[in-house]
Length: 307
Length: 268
Image (cartoon, rainbow over all chains, first blue to last red; front, side, top):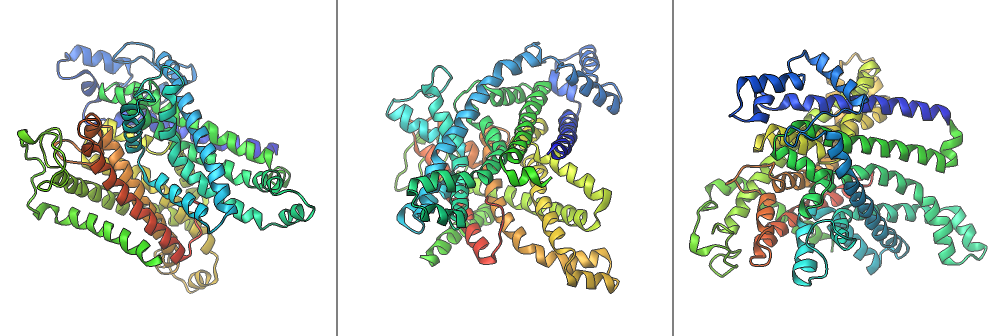
């Protein structure tokens, strides 16, 4: 257990370094002179030189990289070129909104997928099963940047039940959470179905039924419990898709999170902020995946005791 | 039951490809602005109506088909080629090279979904070539991981060992003894990959990071249409349904193909 934990930790650290390096290199992909691109055509040579120096872009590449990592380690993400605010403050201000959206998107996905997938598995090859699978196919095929506007058209503009955009109260959270969670719920429903079908053929399910346990007890305590491990793994892996989708969802609903900040900063050519946003979301994803792995090992005695 | 689940999606995809390939020769005017027709609803003359600049939406949809097909085609070619090459060689040669390549793949996989593509196209600037580049950078890893896993599972089979014993060199072994065994899962993965790329291209264009106006993309059409949903819902319905139909068709055919080739891939 301890060994798995440490080997996992080391490979995570390698990935974290890789992610930081890749994000650091992004600014060097700006076509032409990044400093000129950021300041625009009206900038004087003195301004260009000053910004180049303050971003460290006049240093050799390796020195820049080392400087970037040292600054990160000190929690210093630099300054926005547009607002002059410290980038760490901007991220702290926006991150809770993204976390909230991601959490409720995940909740929608799980709340839709568990019953749908279970019914599909328990009533295999019936109308319920086909219906659930059609939903699943539609869910993965419908782009969130179209689903969002459609939901707005129906629930906000036509029926007037829910706000169009913003983040005022819990009502304004509903449509973004559904928009974000639908694709994941579709993937998850399929996963729940196939895992449950496998589990339902196991001996211990027959035993549970033989000893006279009610069907709901069999499903809840024996089948779903054993099916939960692969589902958790998929959930952890798919969280990346969720976080990526959050960027687009935030734009649709003017949700004031990291995704919106990313796109705004791209439009303002505020590249240091773009880098910081990408870094924050990617590192959160790495963290969640590592936690999922540890949780998995902890939940499953077979994994726990095998090492 | 089985038949029309294959025929209808195939027909839709054929239509998509035909629009993309024949588009330049069709008598279309996707950028022709007719001011009196601004936001006009669908009619018998112009089936899908006009957009906010008075341009015919059907013509723009066909132009959008060209964009999405061009991007999907090149991204799949690049990602499958690079991914398969890297994955197969990494597994076959093993050792430190494999160790390093696996770490590099881990780093690329650490970027959530479309995020790296958003960052890359945001920084490189809009343009269809940059979209292809950004999506290929994101796309190759999945194929590399799959090709590596598959190669690992076949590299110790007897026919491969026999080839080694007969003195065959690496390129020959990979080409004739390993590749044929990788094709089925790679084809299935590539099919689902096309669906992902079509959505991603439209997503980037929706964010304003894809193709530049006046070139049409279904994604930018959805974005433009969102502003006029109450007065001209056809502006957002037409490109959205088209996109949905194409992606749905690819996914249905992918499912059928997976069953047919009997590939046990990870669920989605």
